[in-house]
Image (cartoon, rainbow, N blue to C red):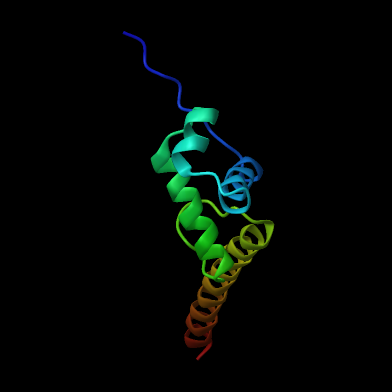
Length: 99
């Protein structure tokens, strides 16, 4: 018994599917049937697009370039805050040693 290979889709493809549904007025089931996609995944893409349009991060991988950049900057910010905390602790440690 062979397992089905899990397909992956890039953000550009997901946005195209969302635009087909929103702008062309096609139903989710029509698009899924025509493109051989799972309805659950497409509905998740629609929810993600709605969240991003509202300015929230949403769940899952970001679809728009703007949200991808925001996530990257948030991760970088988190890393830098961690670095600052380490430096604060180190300077406090060495300040105690000098006394």
